[in-house]
Image (cartoon, rainbow, N blue to C red; front, side):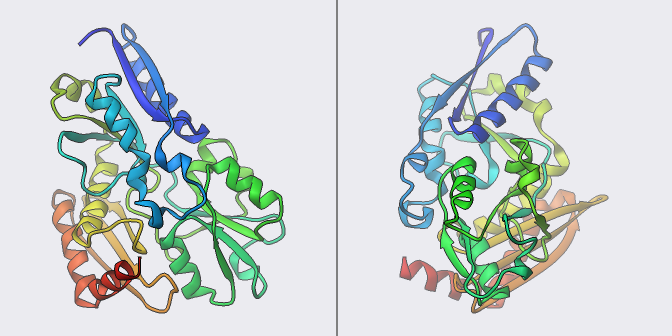
Length: 309
């Protein structure tokens, strides 16, 4: 390996912030190396008139970056873990998961301080079936409408009056120094987060063994164990953005507390399950909570939703 490290990233402001964050950490660790950023536009960034569940899911945000890894234009790719498919294509590995930022969803509105204040038929924008299902279950009197685009585009649509409120990931707003736009944070009890929400993942081509030890210091073991449990749950249920599925884990000393949720998009039925296990059993814990959800009818919901797609 030469003295240059190239990071592949999407070109949105948030994705570039994430890449620059990893760039700065690598430059701090390895001052003798030059760390470059290769900005790219993905299919997910280009197709904005349809929901993600209709155009192939969040994998559309990583495909082009993986091509750059495979052909050697880049050494590593930085992703929001919640945008990474549960099963990576052959030839690619996630080798580091950074310390998680705020994992919660954020309520953003000019007129209202919380979801509970929204009047009947108020319009709430979100890009996520997971958020939509939980919103509809708790607030059936609201109108939930699709909201695509980067953070700035979504905020602009709110500012233009197209929505009464929108729901965004708190981590993205905080990273872009837009915390003042958050009217309130939604607790996991109010809106259970997506698997990996708030954490960054670093992906490399599997054959790049020269990079594994180099990137190891970026891995945050506590966050990684939680994300392993979350992604294990989602993977066991065939999780994708076509299905309203949430998975959120927290470390409690040497244990992981994992909560999972599966729902119909209209919120008519919401199934939840939870369990604890030692951190060393993160992967097994994910499968165990998935089994609890299955026993309560999660697969029937998932199959029904996928058949309608």
